[in-house]
Figure: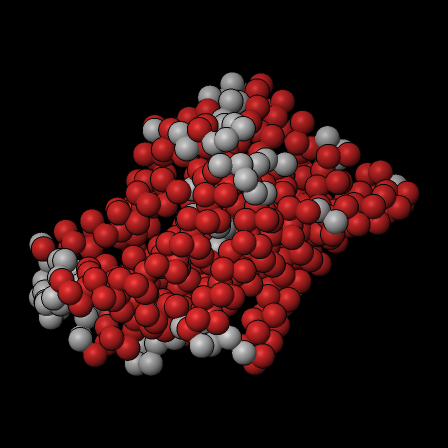
Length: 433
């Protein structure tokens, strides 16, 4: 299969995805059809061992555990109490409760791992208060959609688990690498909110909360910080694998749910069903991606593309610019998981061949995935936030509200390129690094 043939197959695959066929089926079909065409029918015989190997990958066990962790914390009422505490501390800043939106998303992201779940959870809690206080509609919705993207950058992150699985990189290092960029991007979002409020239109000033009341409410912040500390601390110190750290997080979440009085059979049943549904979808897509990867590897497509890039003498920065434009365009039409599993097997060998660090590349691809969550027409967070509105307004409000955050994230991506240590400093100091 030539590079031209690969390009044709890739475009065909995208076209099929856009008409709504299941991602896993499209990826598997491309892999099988391409393999049979170029290698013969005997290629199909190797797929059983590939799928079996994927299903028995210990690393992927962490995916349902992190999903379950987020579900338990959501159903235990953590998000409501956490948002109230953040509102007490941050409400007096310029921008008011919009800071609580970003802070709430960042804290929930530290226990969840999903952008969609983060945006939906914090949005459900925050929107009634924002509407009651007559905050600007577009700014409110935009902060929730953009804040939700932190769900896949601040660890734990399902997107990083998938990247690590597809590229055989340390998920622990990827998680740790996401901490500083996640905190800094949260700060950038909040700085924009403060500046736009100071130099913008009508300001809304929240009621002042006494220091004693703030301290009393701070107990509701202990749970997310505690879980984040245990999960990330065990990884950083080399005491646990990603799967083991996820298990620790689930045990702690169950204990917190028990303390809150929300732990019962109905809640657990709902959490397990949601976890099984999401995990099944993700694993099927990963299996389809691995089938396609087998075909690509056997026919030498990644090697040919790497040789082509070398022949064109493209330097790392030029490749960075090309990939940024590529992901921006692709993110307008594909949801995050589809975009990752179809591009990482091709982009990874090319990027690493020109000297780009694989851990840095993982954080970069996650940032590009974040942008895909808020770029129309297929930005999932746009539709999630729109779906929880009660005023019946147009999705144009959400899109208008996220535009500044798109430019902030693009600027931050370039900052990460020129200061790669923002992502690489902590992983370089991990135990056993």
